[in-house]
Image 1 (cartoon, rainbow, N blue to C red):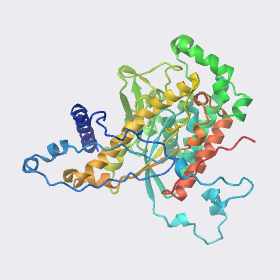
Image 2 (cartoon, helix red, strand yellow; image 1 turned 30 degrees about the vertical axis):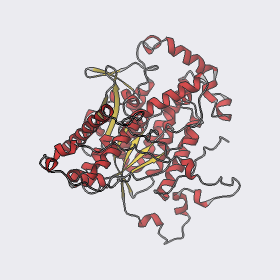
Image 3 (cartoon, one colour; image 1 turned 90 degrees about the horizontal axis):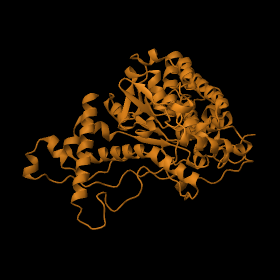
Image 4 (cartoon, helix red, strand yellow; image 1 turned 180 degrees about the vertical axis):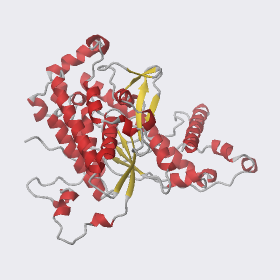
Length: 468
């Protein structure tokens, strides 16, 4: 795996050098080195997709090129293509369902199984097993959506989870699932995730952002317009956690000590984990794998600098992993390519919406959009890198290598609920209200259920049920 990961890093370095060359020698005025297409990379998708490899007709190598060693020929990269573009869910939204009509297609598949006559095999039983690596994005309390997705995936015995990467709330979901699997299989993983989020909801009672009726009636306003949040926002602009919390007390630390067996996660039989944190001194990502895991590493991945003191590990201090990798995607790709047989599918569970056509005009709306763009930027960069790696398969030296053959089989799916997440303000991420968590959990189950039924079909716009 190390050699293949080094090969991936070398290809990416060559790609960056090529971009610099194109920027210096751009021939057409007014056009950037990236070409005429300047659309945002990694646009939002609720659609599971396969990143298709674009096949190009191989050009005959000149006598000079043929004399070069294979790795030097790879440095002569073709022109950069537009980055990965994934269609938004609105492009193929299904009609509005009738709320008074029971739709059996919307019923979870686990419930429909129970209704089958005795002796009848469900259709899923005839499906071959699927190997899936999970990339879990962070997002505070909104990570309960990811909990719902994982909870539904664990219902499917034919789905084999091979590895997980995550940042912030995604890291918490990852370690809870892996710890529960070691303790009691799928049932243990479901139980541990449930304990994690219900205990996190209990911490909301200690929050300075009290729940309000407005939050339940109008999710698009809710916590962002509550007096408590406004005071807290002003407070944290002028007072640091080193002042209002000089002893560095974090209730999440005790929660992790109670629920997560770090020693078990370091064993060889544990699910491979890739947890990201961001170095405070230079902004670089540090990747914590199983052998490096600790309670401090998990807390570092979820450390918001306006609320928590930086976490010291070894010789450095760390903040939230979402600043540098949200979530780490390339390490998961490398792990999937290094596995024997066809590469495992990668399922990216996104919490923050990428596409939002609404123009923010209020101070709070502008801050929310800036935060969203900042936390999505590392993921968009990694998606472009994956697309570029697959484009390099037009080079015979790479296409015929073991790495190239594995890369050709790579599939990437993405799940999200943009229409709902756009309604929720950033402040609700900081307050794990039980009602919000339960609604997001149910939404995640419904989105995952649709993907399991039709993994290659467009996803209808999900809607979050109102509380009774």
